[in-house]
Image (cartoon, rainbow, N blue to C red):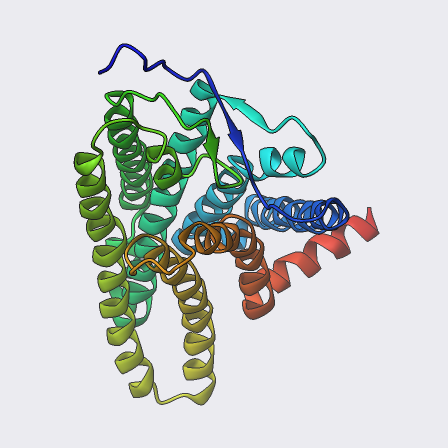
Length: 310
């Protein structure tokens, strides 16, 4: 590289370029959403842990999803909140790359956990007599651990490829956190390899898992239509429809973010989509599962009644 190029040590996150009064409003609103995200997912974790009736593979994966949602939101939302009420919006480059790594890792993990959850529901509805054998605790543990290891390794690949690039400016990221596509714009070298790896990773971590989920739920839908009991059909459909809501929200926003053609204002579009799956989706997950799942609501009522009697 040229001799007049220097390595950057910190960058400025431009965030939401709005009026100061609106920034304070957004700070209060996003703080509320973030608090509810931690509270909602924390309540689900507590209920699953404390109620022995929920110690099943389905809720084992749901607890993983809750942990992933809290971790995913915590990887970028606190910095966003701090920047909304602070004039100093800089972040050192190493913590910036760490933020990129963790948000990618937890996003990948959520993709894989949603696939595993869809497979769990497929086995439970289409092969109920063999469910305990197919979805044994050993299998569940292997699926959970493998998903985490693969997710963190794939995120590490992205970060290693970023580290090979020289970064000499500009010193500003037009985003509220160190999102990978925005970070690559800081590089003063060709990023074609990074772009190719990101696209290939999207195919394997978004298109592939989404296809598996759709296949699973297509088979589930066919099985539900064959159920003779009206109550059984409604219960199965209610459980699976909540899963499909989560899948549609997460995969839809991520695919639009990384695989759809860019609009005339790609930065602003990326901010809105990133905010959706960084803050709103982790908030909606516990609401969808608690409001549409009779077992979770029953466990919550039992926990509340137990607290009142003690």
